[in-house]
Image (cartoon, rainbow, N blue to C red; front, top):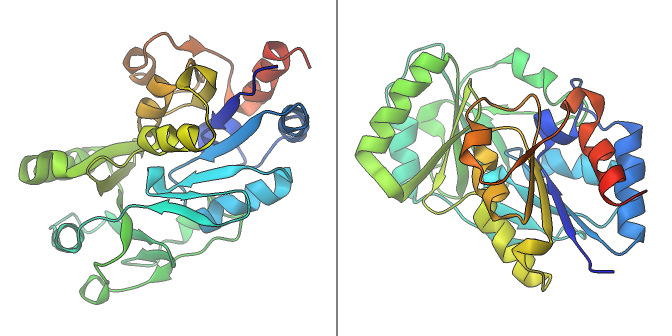
Length: 265
């Protein structure tokens, strides 16, 4: 048997509509690990947010967090980290934005936000991950893995255009949802992190099966030998990924169902 690496996004992909793991998903991934395969979770979420799902799976999974800014091994050891240049992070903190757009920083030590936003806690209710309110004037621009703007899609598009014009390839700009503009250092994305992980595991991209649903999954899916795009995916994602297969809806535990058929479990 050739070992494979199964790598999956979380929200909109591996997790159900309630942002939790379906029992069948847990069962299938545990079975694949017992067969000698590797598992990785790759998300825009913070490591402290993601590790709860790894603990629930109770398998030795690698975690690619903050859209590839951090990679941890199954024991929780940090293998790699990539931060925005402090001057870039500071410029993004200072960037004028509509008052309803929330500014967020993901750091190794946690999640900072410019104002209280209780509605965001619903997404993280199953993990207990919480933000800390920090006024922008007091935000630390060093050690930032991701700057995240949350708000109206039209406002975010305008911010995206400003950042792209000012910094170009010096920053990696993507979306995890239409309401979530995510900015990392140039060259930081899930695909780059996945390539390094495959090399560490002595596997080729052809031995990788990847699952995703949004634009921040593009590079990861294009790298994998077998790319699966969810039925509920962003409309533009399927066209951005060469040779992708469209599978079922995340609310129906479609990743687990597809893996059961693929590996004849």
